Image (cartoon, rainbow, N blue to C red; front, side, top):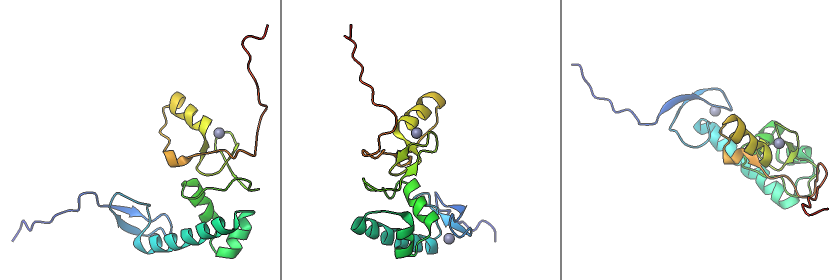
Amino acid sequence: MKGQSYKEEKNATLKTCKRCKHAFTYYGFGYEYCPVCKQIDEDDYLKVKDYIYEHGISKIIDVVRATGVEEKVITNYLREGRLEIPEGSSYYLECERCGTNICSGRFCKSCAATLIKELSTTVAYNEVGDSPDKQVTGKMRYLNRDNK
Ligand SMILES: [Zn+2]
Ligand SMILES: [Zn+2]
């Protein structure tokens, strides 16, 4: 007999797990990890998060040592905007475009604005990071229009 009906899951697609590179069924939401890696990822994320909020982040290597989570994994959390580097840290991420210090994500706010405006690129909100207040790059300029 033919015509056995088979209902496909609406948003199910086959994806490659970002972490272990195995194929898995992805339902169109959440991070692109297979169920096994998702659990590991979640555990690692909580470890790192707890550590940072307890101790602050002085050097990323300390976090790596204390949690056993790989540096590239931690950096990835920061790039994804899942973690933020607290103010006053000696380690920050760099904007991928201009190199200014940011607390999370891939771009600083002004680069994100430029990318969207001039290149019509979509920049997800979690890819845009705040710059730390402490670090002031460039000169502050005061514009005074009535300066005679
Ligand atoms: Zn996986
Ligand atoms: Zn920038």
